[in-house]
Each structure stands twice: as C-alpha cells, then as structure tokens.
Amino acid sequence: MLRASVIVFPGSNCDRDIKVAIEDVTGFPVNMVWHGDATVPASDIIVLPGGFSYGDYLRCGAMAAHSPIMRDVVAKAKAGTPVLGICNGFQVLCESGLLPGVLMRNASLKFVCRDVLVRVENDETFFTKCYRDDLVIRIPVAHAEGNYFTDEDTLDRLEDEGRIVFRYCDEEGEASEAANPNGSQRNIAGICDETGKILGMMPHPERLHELALGGSDGRRILESILVSQLEAFG
Amino acid sequence: MKARIKITLKNGVLDPQGKAIQHAVAALGIPGVEDVRQGKYIEVVLAEKTEEKAREAVERMCKDLLANTVIENYSYELVETP
Image 1 (cartoon, each protein chain N blue to C red):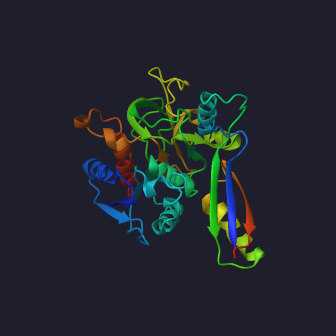
Image 2: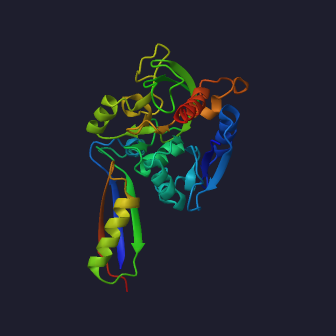
Image 3: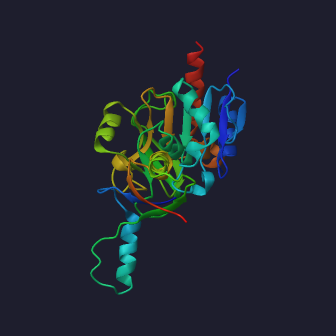
C-alpha cells in the first residue's frame, strides 16, 4: 500500500491540512512524524508542511533543518523518496541543502497572505504532471520570507534544467514585477531538484484542493503524486 | 572562552530591513545617513580553553548553522573568559 508521511515540527501549522488533502485526493494513509524521531517510516511521499518551525528562530527553517528527523529525510530523499516542501517546508529544504538558494524576508517587509497566480513551468516533474505547461493557476500564499535568492549561475542552471517549476505571474501569464508578491528572483514560486522528485514551493496547494475551499487549482499537485506513484508501480 | 560572532549580509544582497531602518533614522530628523545594513550578533561561551579547538568549533557552527553562506558572511573574535 502507498503511504505518505508528514513531518511535524514544533510550530508547524499546516500539517493537518496537508494530511487531510493527501487522504482526500490520493487515499494514501498518512503518518504524522514528530521532529524528534530518528526515522521516517517507509513512505512513498514525505511532506514538510507549512508553519513556523521552531518559531522561525535564527532563520526560517534553519533549526528544523538540523532536527533529528531531517537526517533521515535527507537520506531518504537522496535515495529517491519524493519530498514536497510547502512554504516553511520549502525553507527547510533550502536550509538542509536538498534545494539550492535561500528564502529571504519579503522585499515589502510585509507578511503576504492572499491568493496569487502562478504559471506552471514544467509539467514533467513528479508533482506537476497533471498540469500543463504555461497553465496559470490560482493558489494562496501566506509568508513573510518567500523572497527566493541565489547566485546568477545557479539561477541560470535552474532555468536551463527546467527546475523552476512555478513562477508568479499576472492574468496573461506574464511573470511581471507587479505580479511578484515577495521580490523573489525571476518570480520564482517553486523549484525542484535534478530528478524532479524534490519540490519546494511557497504557495499552499492544500489550501485550495477542493471546491468547498473556494478553488481546486492546488489539487493537481496531489493528483500528480498519485499518478506518478501509480506509474512507478506500473 | 567566549566567541563574539557577527553575521552580516553579503554585498549585493538586498537588505530591506536595513533600508527600513535607514528611513526610520531619517524620520528621526538625523540627516546624512547614506546606507544601513543590519545583521546578527551572537555570543557563544565555550568550555574549550585552547584557541585552535575553539576556532574549529566556532567555524563549524557558523558554517553549518549560524550563518547561511548563500547570503551571509560571518566573522568572530575569541576572548578569554575568567
């Protein structure tokens, strides 16, 4: 049976939401795994949820990246287990070195909590195959540190390798400055690793995964997880 | 031994907090402030008595945790504690 694990850090606050969304869309049973545990149970998908792990002390995600469970998450990710980091989870992925770069304080210095539009840039990753390239989706963000930064060489590499998965855009799909909620370089909203199986994204797919929530554009991330895993099992 | 660690943003990394501080200083009516960059100051007390070992420990904690070297530089001084 396919299984999911959601890592729970002190200060995580979207862990239950993503659990419900995974159960709802994929039917996978979900383990809630405490940050102090040494190992993640065998999983077909590991999620690092949104929230404020360790109160955002030092830097967002920095303490969580060094928590006991992360050693095993990093090991399993490197061995091929897909990992999705949402919001604070994206920050943890960057701080733990599974993804390059860092999420800095928003250029506006404000906490931004609203729906934004993002353009799908790569529909071939583990997490996005149920979307189509250039599709514009509506999805909520809620963060004060979502301003993606890395050096120019790394940005070019991400671009060339198709690892920029989502970009903030306007209604026409233009990645304009006005559509960028946080000052992120090249309007980056989400990136993946070389294999497309580790995705970090600032927007919250679980918050719009069914129409009762006001929209379902985030649902296809979860559907993609299901389809990808079913394909893997032939 | 005590380590006094300073963590600063690298040159060229945007510092919106520094900019906000600069504007607030101007609002105080203090003219001539051309730039503000903010950072962190951390004091760590080490049981280690030898400078070499203390340096090793501080380097490691700076690189692995205290600073994110994608955007930050760190520097430190070691002082004897009584």
